[in-house]
Image (tube, rainbow, N blue to C red; front, top):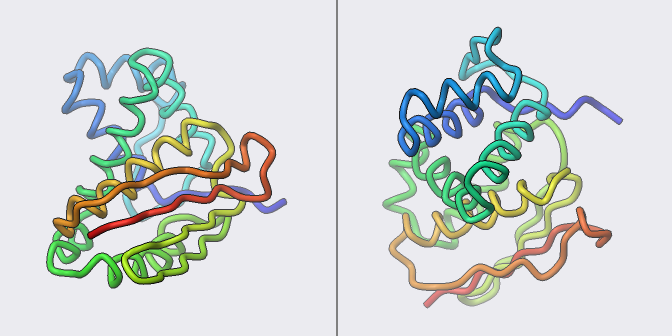
Amino acid sequence: MDERLIRGHVINRYLSFIKNTWGKDGMEQAIEECGISEIKVDDSIFYSNEIMERILKWISTNHGMDRVKQAGKYTAKNLGLFAYMVRFMSMEAMLHKAEERYRELYKFGDIDIEIHDKKAIARMRDVSGIEENCQGWLGVLEAMLEMTKSKGTVAQIECQVNGDASCIYVVEWQ
């Protein structure tokens, strides 16, 4: 299996969520406990996804799974110019762009999004190695609804971490 790599930009947004939520002391604690104190994460460089998983585990262990979902929302809303541009997109356009954006930020897994009249099925294969990833993706998809000012819901109906062939999320909006 190829190494699972994630762009530093995503890692830094999760660390920013930690700092904004629990302050500088919280961020220093997370960095120390995750074993990444010696790493200066550069937005443009790819790093092992294991770093991201340690950060997600830290959030869930210390603050609960709901905070992992909040971190996913925060990250999606704060991914620079893309997060700004999507405020002017429809939900459909944003979901189409999400597949491309995933490939820019992650060097593993696959996302396929089928869109049908105000409903989307997002199939994510080999994307989540731990259940915290799944919660983060729920937050990301909920953030898409919020950023496009679309009222709707997101539900995970299958989970690869729990033995299904892929993680499947259903997104519905008005």
